[in-house]
Image (cartoon, rainbow, N blue to C red; front, side):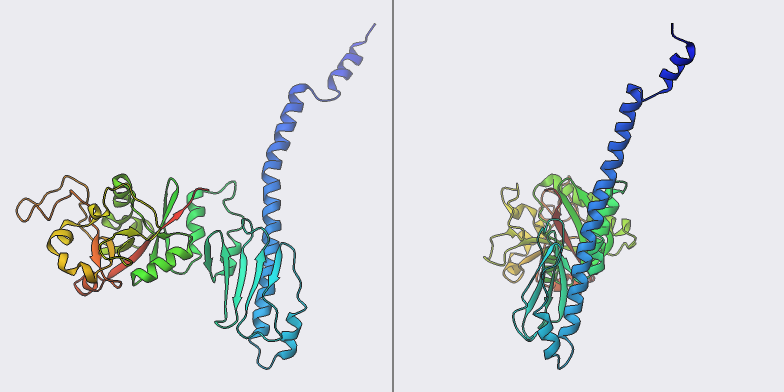
Amino acid sequence: MFSSKSINSNKNSGFSLIELVVSIAVLSALSAVAIPMFSCFLNKSKATAAMYLMQEIKKNCIIEDSIDKNANLLQIKDINGYRIKGISKDKCDDQVILAQAIKDDVLPTFQYNVNSDDLVYKYKGMEGKNLSGCLGLICGNGIFSNKNDEMKKKYNIHDFVVKNAAINNECSDYVIVEASSWDEAQKRSQALGGNLVTINNKEEYSWLQNKVWAKNKLLNDSGDNSDESTYFFTGLNDVEEEGKYVWASGEESEFNNNEDLIHRQNWIAQQGMASSKDYFVIGGTNDKGFTDYVQENYRPDLYNGSSGHLTWVDNNSSWLKNNGNPRHFGLAEIPSCT
């Protein structure tokens, strides 16, 4: 015969099946957060050590009459997560010294060019001099963070990026960069891991028109409030072969001919200037590209929305700048999908 006391005692001992399942679920959730965070902080500590080492190497290399100190560089060995390369002389002259990440998909590489005295990072297609900002990218998108904010943070570490002027659409990040010429805009786009924007089809054109340059929307959304006429350098150019319009990214577009993107006024009325204008900008205050707009009163063959609105310019966009349109930026496009 069982007493009620023994029955109650058995009920209170151990876990029920439901309690066990709940406990496992909680532990799994905590592990899902804790393990990536630990891995993130471990990688960040490795990169921090490599950064400090390269800063010390740079310091030694710029000290005058430092043959003994340069000799000490020869004794530097690989550190956790990194291989040290380029230290092969007893002097720092004309060397490129690397802290090369063994896993460059999770750790940045640091490069010191002795000749130019530049210490830069290279990480996931980007490069720059803001080393502490680079360390902030290692942990990536935090599990509780806003992905759009994290994307902006990633690009904001570059001093040539207009702060918070970044937006994503599917597998592309679009970022506004400060630039006074096409060459400068393209170089800075490449430093972000991309190129000047490629407009692949009318849908992308319309999306960019509404989200980026119409009424300076992306600039205004970033806090740079202005209704001033603003133009953006794009990737379209015919630098290599006159009249053959290609994108800086090397991508093909869905247009039958990239000439369809060129403003009709440029294409029909200003063919004579084409040979001296190898680049294109987009923007201004009156982009009616690929819409049903037609200016009936004057030259509807030129002023209509049947084509794109890209405008021929030289490398510095001299004509536009000299005729009341000084504001120019580059519009970078960076692949965001693996």
